[in-house]
Amino acid sequence: MLARAERLIAWRYLRPRRQEGFISFVAAFALIGIALGVGTLIVVLAVMNGFRLELLERVLGFNGHATVVAGPEGIAGYRTLQRRLAAVPGVVRATPYVEGQALATAESVSSGVVVRGMSLDDLASVAIFRGNLLAGSLDALARPRTALVGSRLAARLGLTVGDPLTLLTPDGTPTAFGTVPRIMTLEVAAIFEVGMFEYDNAFLYIPLEDAQAFFRLGDRVSAIELMVADPEQIDRLRPLLEAALPPALGLVDWQQLNSQFFQALEVERNVMFLILTLIILVAAFNIITGLTMLVRSKARDIAILRTMGASRGAILRIFFLSGATIGVVGTLIGFALGLAFALNIDTIRLWLEGLTGFELWSAEIRFLSRLPARVEAADVVRVVLMALGLSFLATLYPAWRAARTDPVEALRYE
Image (tube, rainbow, N blue to C red; front, side):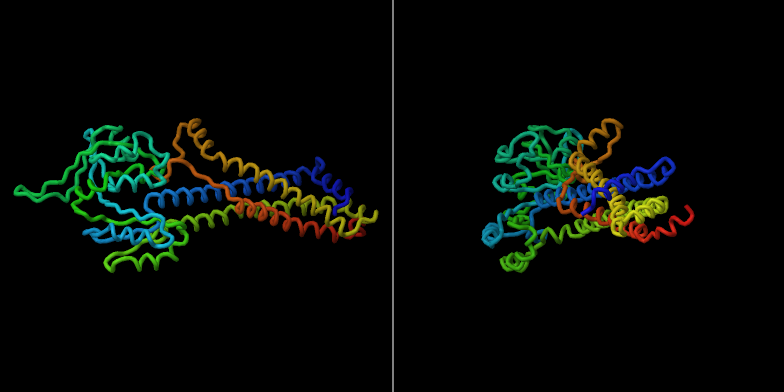
């Protein structure tokens, strides 16, 4: 334990006299550097965690954890296969659907869309739609020729609930006058917004029977989407799922579809951690510089303390406490600022946009309509411990040099 006198002397050395102002400046610079490094690192890790979680929830919410795929001819006898897949242990839901691309037209405005046909019961069971309807009701999709439209797509086409919408596909019907595009007129039954630009901007849901007729699949579907209890365990379930499939069908899981994307996020997260750690490391070098200068300016004081009976250990503890205080205070300030910023980052972003008049967060570029952040306790603890560890290591050498000061040499020319 540190003696009271050692704490008092260490605290006094943290407040240098006027002629030692440069030492004070270096110490303040080190404290600010550690605070900025810790705070920035907490914010960046929280945003990266938020990105991964938001994208994972939305991607899996729309596409499922695994998908049974077939060729252009689709999957025949899908109801039997659906029951067989749903019976596999670990599978929560098996959902057949029809998917294809079309041109949506309304009010003389056209846009390419992804049309997905699902039954009303299957559509209502998709968790991502619950609480994300801006207008209308899913129950209205029980009627034929109705559609569930993404919010950004509806805004571009000028659609509201009850408006007509026309779908066209170039894969039409051959006639004596050439191929006539297939056309279907729908009524907008509901508008959804899940907060991911790609889906809000381009997806459109219609009843399964209408999609089968529009894409001329008869009583077949394009694919069967599978939801499992634990998506992280999809590799363990894969052999069981493949055993339940006919040879002509394939299985694609979410890790195969999105592996490069999430690996890129993880690499970016690790690189940002390394880069921002360098800020803290530079601040730690400033601690070494400031403390070394303090030791040299206090050589006479150290010699007097030694002649008064202070041990080498006491001198080491005094200067170690002086340097460690800078690291601890800087880390605590950075921890508080980083945590406050990360927990309110989207509010701060909206405030800055209102203040500057510039759009700081474009959903078209970044896929999400809001800036996500998720503070993980393990990340915060790791950052704090790393900052404290570097700060403590930075104080060891100057404190050791102070303890090694020879009082005879220090007082020879006094």
